[in-house]
Length: 406
Image (cartoon, rainbow, N blue to C red):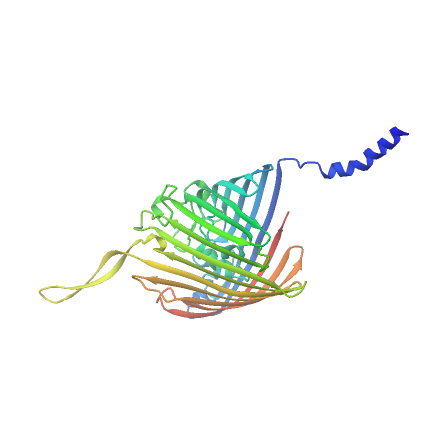
C-alpha cells in the first residue's frame, strides 16, 4: 500500500519536476522587423524624383545562447544603399524594384551578463546613441532618423548597467561603449556591389582609412554614453533617452565630432483598446563629419590689369546639424493613425543649405500573423540637388511589415 501511494505521488510530481527542469543549451532565438516599402512621389520640381521606388528595409536578429549568461548576437540589416534611396531616391518617373538593394551585417558581438543588472559585450554593434531610428512610429520617420543619427559600423566594446530599479522612481540604465569604425570584411555589403560610374552608391564595399569620416581613426578613441529610464509609478507609460557621442576625425577631417541626443515617449491608455503615444527627439551634431577639408570658389583681380581671375581655395567645412522629430500616434484595437513632423537643419560655414521639413500622416492596421499594413502621405520641403534651393514634393507611402519571432 505504501509503495502504491509513493508511486502515485511520484507520478503526480513528475509534471512539476519537468516544468522546473533547467533549460538546455545551446539555444537559438530569432526575430524579424522588416518591411516592404513603396514610395511614390507624385509631384516634385525635379523630374528624376517623381515615380515609384519599391525596396526592403528592416532587420533580422538572432541570438545563439551558449549558457544562461553568455550568447552570440547578430543582426542582418536590409536596405537600399544608394544616396537617398531609402526615402524615395530617383526613380526618374518610372517604377523601380529593389534598385541598389543590399544586406549587410549590422551587428555581431559576444554578450556576457555577469549579473542581472549588468551586461557586457564586444564586437561589431550600433553605438548607444539616439532611439528614433529604432522605434519611431509611422512609415518613413524611422528611416530618415536612420540616415542621420544611427552610429553604426562600430567595432569595440560596451556595456549596460541598471543602476536603479524602483517601483516608484522607475528603472534606469546607463550604457557606454568605446569603438572605432569597423574596417574589417564584416563591413562589406552583400547581394549588391557598386556598378561602374554610378556615384549614388553610398555603401558598396568594406570601409577603408582613405574614405575618412568621423570615427574612422583606427583606435578606440570614440565613445558613446546613454541614459535611459522608464517604469515610473507616478507617470506610467513615460520613458526618456539622453545620450552623447564623440568621434575623432578621419584623414579628411580636422576636428572631433560631438553629438547630443534627447528623446521622450509617453503613452496614455484611455481604455483596454485605445491608447495615444506622444514621441519627440532632438539630435545635434557639432563639427558634423569631423570638419572636413573642402574646396571653395574664389575670385581675385590682376594687380596691373584689374582682370577678374577665378580659382579655388581649400578650407574646412564647419557644420552644426540638428535633426528634430515630433509626433503622435493613436491606436484603437488593430488600427493606428500617426502624424509626424521632422526637420533637418544644417548650418554650415561654406556651401550653405536651407532647412528641410517633412510632414507625414498615415493610417495602418494589424492584419494578423505579425503582419501590418500602413498607407500614408508625405509633404516635403527638400534641398534640390542641382540648385541647393528648396523644392516641394508630395508622395504616397505604403509599408507592408512583419514583426515577430520564430
